[in-house]
Length: 125
Image (cartoon, rainbow, N blue to C red; front, side, top):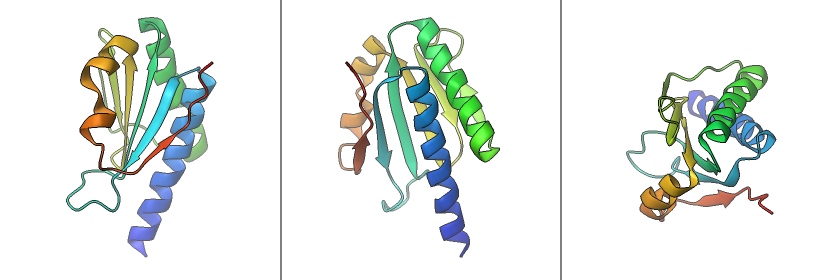
């Protein structure tokens, strides 16, 4: 029962993260699911990018606001606000990665974890 509760909580946080990203016009939003992978440290990675430092920061703030208002959760850890090239918000079972476009292209997290099931939430023009 506890496992199902944790998964339900992770799914609620995932939905709130995606809503926050979409509200701030995050680009190429993708989630990678690790819940069925052995020894996974979390259930989901959620990745998107902004076109500038200001937008990346706005997306991160939008995610935090959305998750807090919809689930009550706050990030366990938050990093990368110094230069906002790669902002990480760690909700334990959901880890959020917000990049500037060129940094996302360089690290290519989606390719690094290509064996994980993924879902696109693309609303790019």
